[in-house]
Image 1 (cartoon, rainbow, N blue to C red):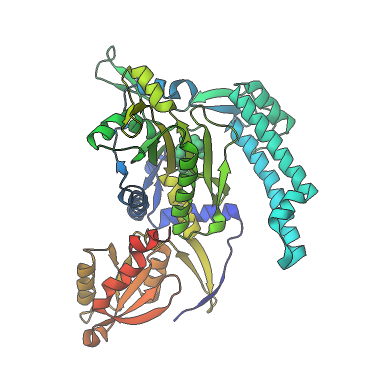
Image 2 (cartoon, helix red, strand yellow):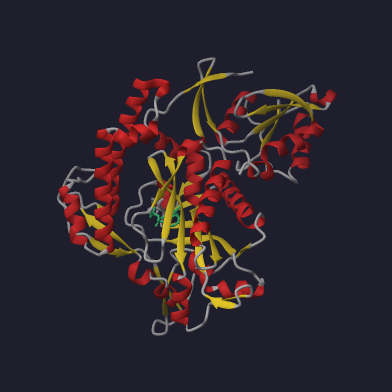
Length: 522
Ligand code: ATP
C-alpha cells in the first residue's frame, strides 16, 4: 500500500488558481465556451465530469432546502419574463455597477471592486500582524483580544471602515465623482499596469436585452433574467393558493441568470451566464430578524456539512444595503484568490411584493387566519451561485501530495456525496475473464450509483487517474476474485486498501456517499 505523509503546498495563490483551471479542463470538468472560435469571455461549458458534480451540488441543495422542509416547495420559472417585472424590481433603473476605465491601459474595472481590493490588502496586513503575534505568544495567544486592542491592527481596521463607509455613502447617493476622488486619494493604480490615469466613474446596467416576436415593428424588448428571484415573487400567490401554503413558507428555485458583468476574469467565479439556487421565505412582517438569524445559521451549517474546512468560511455583514433590504450578509469562502462572496442572505422586507402589486395592479396579499387579517408578507432570501459553489468545492478539493516513495500524486478530494463517479471498477488485467466479472459488478451497482469502468494501463496509473478525477473508491478485480468472490477496495483519500466480498460493495459505497449521512452533519 502506498502512503503519503506531507502536502506539497502549491507555490502561491496564483499558481494554485492556474492549476485549478487547467485541472478542470484536463479532467473534463469545465471548458471555455466555443473554444474552437477562441472562446466567449466569461462563458463556460460544463463537461462530462463537471455536469455530474454540478448536478450533485444542485441536488444536495435541493434536498436540504425542499425535501427536508415540509413548508418549502420548488418552482421552475422561465428565463424570459414580462418586461414590466424588471421595472417593478428596480433592475431597469438601478441594476448598475460603477465602472471606471484606465486611460493608458484601456482596461475597464468596477470602481467599487478596485476600492474593495485596496481594503483587502490592508486586511492582509492585519492577518500578518496576527500571524506574527501568534508566533510570539504561542499557546497563550488570544486572537480576539489581540485584534481588539493592538494599536496597529486597530489603525488598519479603522482605515478599512472609513474607506468602505465613504464608498457606501457615495454609491448610495449616486455621488460618482466622490467614488473617483476616493480612488485618486488612495492612489489606487491599475492592477495590470500601475497607471493611475483614470476616467470618470459611470453607471453601467448589467442586464442583457433581447427581443420577442418575429416582425421588427411589433417586437417586444425583453431582458434575460438577471436573477431567479423575481420568477418566485410573481408566482407567490399562485403557489400559495394552489399549494395551500401557510406562512411561514418558502419557494425554492434553481436556474440560469444572466449579467453583462464589467469585469469577469476569475474563471467561473464571475460569469455572464450562470446558475443560481435561490429560496424566498415568506414571513409575517416583524419576524424578519428572527428568520434572518435562522437562515444565516442554517445555511452556514449546510456549507460546513461538506467538510471543506470551518476556517474557510466567514460572514460579511453589509454596511451598504440594497434598496430592497433591511439586513444582509454574505457567506464568504476562501477561494484561491482570497475570501469572496459565495452566498447572500437578504432580508428583503415587503419591497418586491409591494412593487409587483403596484406595477401589476393585482393584490399579492396573504390572509392570515390566526390574525384574521391580510398583509403583504416580508421575505427572507437565501441566494447562492451554483457555479461559485462548484468552484469552492473543486478548488478546495484539488491537492498535491508527496508520497513516501518520493513521487507526488494529484488528488481531487471532493466530498464523496458530490463526486461525479462514486466508484471505479478496474479489472487487474484485460483477460482471463476479469473484465467480465468487473463489468457484472458495474451492471449491478449502476442502478444506485454512478460507476466508472476502466481497464486501460497498469492498475497504479488507473488509481492515479481516478484520484485526479475525484472518485472516492476504486474496486479492483483480480485472479483471486474468480475463486473467493472478493475484490480489493481502495480509498482515494487514505489510499487504504481492504479485501471485501462483492456483495458487500453496495453497502460500502452507500456508507461513503449517502446524502442522509452527509446532511445529518448539519
Ligand atoms: P457580486 O457582489 O459578487 O457581484 P452579488 O452580490 O451581485 O455578487 P447576488 O445578486 O446577491 O450577487 O447573487 C447571489 C449569488 O449569485 C451570489 O452570492 C453569487 O454566488 C452568485 N453570482 C452573482 N453574480 C454571479 C456571476 N456573475 N457569476 C457567477 N455567480 C454569480
